[in-house]
Length: 361
Image (cartoon, rainbow, N blue to C red; front, side, top):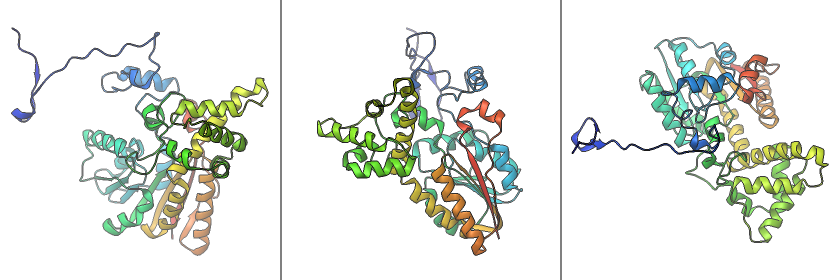
């Protein structure tokens, strides 16, 4: 009898037989579900597929394409030997490019509240040579930036990319998108706090309306809130992404038929955005981070912040302006920097991006 093949490991105890599994079949000629996109989820093996998806302006499943990389590097002016911070590690694309600027001298600290993705990113960066001598990753909220600075010292440059990573958006298990059905979670750290489904269960109509208006400028806030409340009264809690999307569609039944599909799409996007901001306390966290920034930057230190909707951008603009008036910053961006037309064509998720910067006095 032929022996089963084995993969050698470092110790005898860790030796395990190889399991050959047939990939899951899918309907049609191309996989549609996140879990079925086995080629995109294995970029090392299927590099041609990855390149093809990106060339068509898409983002491969399980990946994230960094936005405005060169513009950020131009703003930060990173020099070898400096100490920097990526306050929102994500997939690590920005971090990798900033590490390259150090030329092996200096150190970058990176923070992320998502334990699932930050651990994957740590492994990816280690494989390309960025170990603990150059990079330290902490599972922390960037509102705790003062705690990190107290431990390791001030920073010569800081980046904060406030967008949700594509890996989180595209994975239906995280509940960030209504395009595929999944649990209505929306937490950046699924190990802490309450899910969006739980949050919808505890808010009254007035709170729902306020959340939709304040976090996303939703024009149909009252109608959507009423639809959620009515569903709850029938004993049907909103627990999945598709359930919530269906409620939004039902709430907009008064919109003229020829305009309805587009109105529903936009209201779904705004509703999920509003809920995500609420569940993760994003405005409160950003406000705390902005207030602490001047105290954690070294003299002459530079900060770049990417925002993706008007509420975030207003907070950043007002904070930079206020701290410049106080003398904390010697210069701030007078106008936002936007991604190039070419980048927006290559990466549709870049279209709403705004970059603001400041320099410590």
